Length: 298
Ligand code: PPE
Image 1 (cartoon, rainbow, N blue to C red):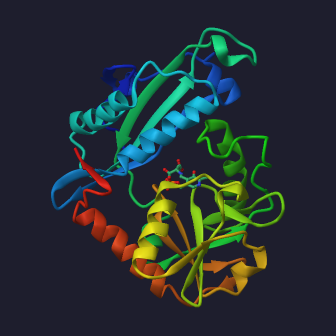
Image 2: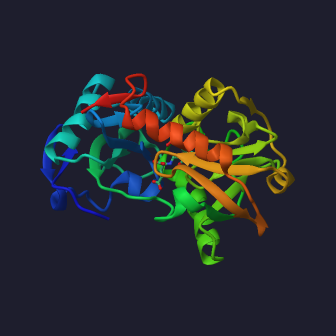
Image 3: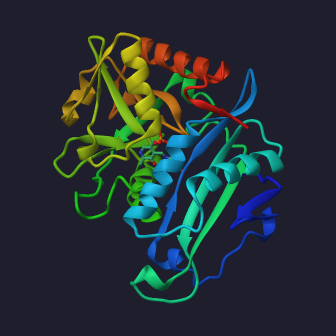
C-alpha cells in the first residue's frame, strides 16, 4: 500500500510508521473491531468526500450493535476524517476509520477492554485491477456462504465478518478469478466479498434485499436512487443463483470497487454492460461535479 504521512489516533496525529498497537490487543485475538471504507475524490471543486454523513452514521450504528462506546461524537469523527485528508494533503484517497477493543483484559467479555479509534487515509487505486471499471471482471460463485441470520450481524461492518469474505476471496483468486459472489444460507445471491451486486434483465435492475445477509451498502443505496431517477425500475428481492446465468448484465458496487461490470460468472459470459456503463458514468459525473447531495468538500 501507499504510505501517507500521518494517522489520526484518538485525537492526535502521529507518524504513519509509529501507528502501532500492543500484540495483546483484544481485536487481534477476537476480531472485535468496527470499520468504514470511504473515498475522497478530486472533483471540479477540489477534494470532496463521497457520502461522508452516511458512512459515519453506519460506523456509529455498527459500534452500537457491539456495545462499543466511542469517546467522540459523529461530528468529531467527521471533522477528524476531513483533517486526516487535509494533513496528508491528499486529493484522491481511501479513508479507513477503525474502532477497536484494545489491550487491557483477555477473554471473551469485551466490555472491560478500552475502545480506541483511528483514521488513516491513503491513495488506493482500482480495487479490482486497472481495467476492471472499463472491461469488467471474472467472478465465481463461492463455495462459502454468507453468515446465517442471528450469528454474525451483517448490518455491522465488523472486522470479524471479514474472515468469511477472506475465505471466499482466497478461493476465487486461487481458482484464477478476480472476485467471489457469495450466496446466503438459503442459496440465494447475497453479495461479493466486499461489494454489493446488481443484475439487469430486460432493463429492470435486481439486487438482493438486506435479509439476504448483505452489508447495507452506501454505494448500493446511491445506485438504487440514481437508477430510479434514470427511470429504470429497481427491485430489491431474493435472487436465485441460476438467475446469474440468464440476465443481461451484472455489476458489483462498493466504495473500494466503485461500479465494476462483470464480464463472466462461473464461465457464463455476459455480453453486455450498456446500462451498467450508463450508471457508472452517472456515478462519476455526480463526483466530478461535486454534487452537494452526495459530496462533502474537504
Ligand atoms: N458488502 C461488503 C461485504 C462490503 O465489505 C462492502 C464494502 C460493500 C458491500 C459495499 O458497501 P459500501 O462501501 O457502503 O458501498 N467494502 C469495503 C471494504 C473493502 C476492503 O477490501 O477493505 C469498501 O468498499 O470500502
